[in-house]
Length: 112
Length: 115
Image (cartoon, chains in turn red, yellow):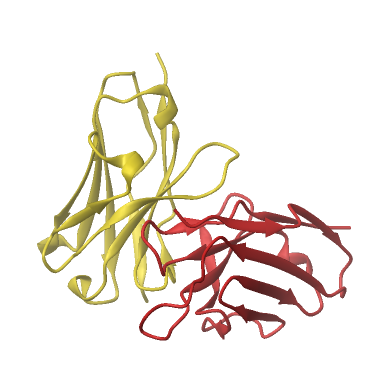
């Protein structure tokens, strides 16, 4: 199975600070169809996960553009440019290139 | 608007069975796969598998073969997850999520297994 390693496990940020979360894959996530199926999700406390970014860098509709994704093959990054209070929660990367689908272990973002 | 509405929380004893439903609305049910994801208390997300909503064919992740069954009531735009012979470690919140991008999730169903 593909292992997704997220760092850091926890992150503490002030409002307005920019932060990055890393997701490293044990295998290349480049699919034979040319796409890379790496998504980023946010799970706010007590809520269902919410899709933020799909296929590495595509912003889901309705998601603020302070969120951005980058990377390729095995190294991926989620950046939040100017954290807001509503951004607190646990961020997960997930891959859908290889079966079984797998999730990273999560990065908890706390607001100082 | 697109919604996935799951059935309510369940309290079960070990050895019993439970069936969770996920009713979809706002789109053509058979156009998208439905995935199931488990989240144990305080833990991360684990993919259980998916069901092809057009053909009804389920695919299970290895850890979810045997006691877990995905099914459909396509006429009601509903996907179901049944777990038999419940164990304490099945205590979790179970989510349905629409393929392809997991852009839509149900609100989750908490299943508590306790004697």
